[in-house]
Length: 276
Image (tube, rainbow, N blue to C red; front, top):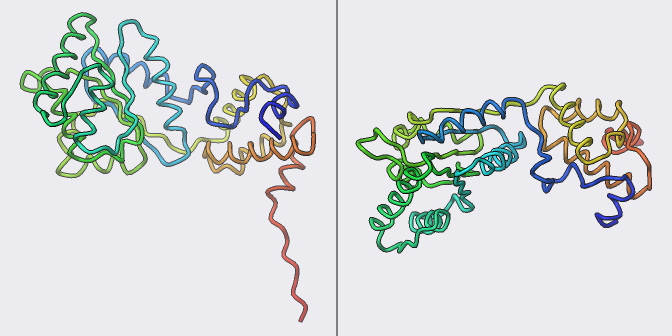
């Protein structure tokens, strides 16, 4: 069954359990608006912020939510790094592309000066620091992370020309305890570390997603409780199970997803006893 037929069958605007939901309908996770307020203030002075956590807790969606909100601020420039694992030369190429500076990778010092001058001009005209968002930042080379620190630092480290938000898994904060990155780690002003969600938060997430997609009655309450109970506080696991339930329900042309369907799919199959 194609996606259009699935949506029509259940009266959905979009599939709420897939990653490509509209940005304006992203779930505002607990604590994200406090972090957004901190970043909005950080933009005035520049510096580093960090968001991290175990896989499946919604780090990338949190970052997407932040990007959407920050891009709506007047005179704020937001760049999103798409290839964090780049070499230093490619790192400069992407930075030049993000901030509209024509760089020659062979002339790294020229690129260093050109980027800083572009940021200074932006700060002079808007009073805001440009913002750089880096998802999967744990993949960045140590040399590139240190280059970011030096690029944004001016006037004997008394002025910061750039706002950087690093987002990565649980290994990212550990990297900043190493000798090579200790100087950068000590400059991180705000941290948001995600942890597994409790049952109330997961239930709120489910109801919010269904309401935004236009089908709050898609699932019975016992099914919601079962999904919350078996997702171990992990949004990705919850979405994977819910998406599979939706697909099977569409195949069977059911009008509502219920607990019985969940039990059919996810209850362990009793093993037959071997005859002696």
